[in-house]
Amino acid sequence: WNYEAASKAVNGRRTLWRPMARAPSRKATKAAASAATVRDLERVLSALGDPVRLALVRNLAKGDELSCRELGGESLPKATLSRHMAVLREAGLVETRKLGPCTMNRLPRAELDARFPGLLDAIFRVPADE
Image 1 (spheres, one colour):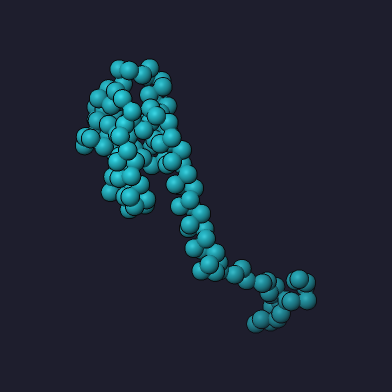
Image 2 (cartoon, rainbow, N blue to C red):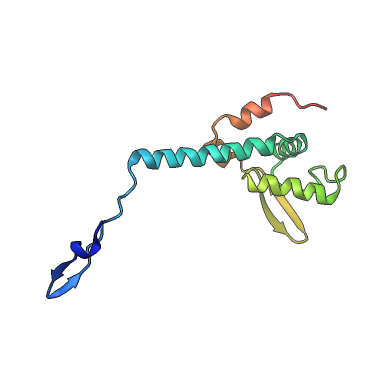
């Protein structure tokens, strides 16, 4: 593409005409959206692949909001529990809010069911190993 040859005189001044960037096609937009969904699903399934994190999500599904101590924090070292909760948060499986010195955790069930219909139901249908 020769920019000099493509320049034109507009209102007595020379302007440089450049090719316009094309908007992405519908097919490309749908492919990008589905790729993002696939990445999100991979992240969620990876987070749920660990038995400790799966147990934490199961406990969260039983209650409305739970603190880390109520989630079973006595059985795990604090640093380990904190790391597991961080992985769950990054995957979008857990939402947190501060309540004084405590951090309350909840499972955003409606949002997860909208993003991945039937996933949590299928996971919770399988009995937990005790």
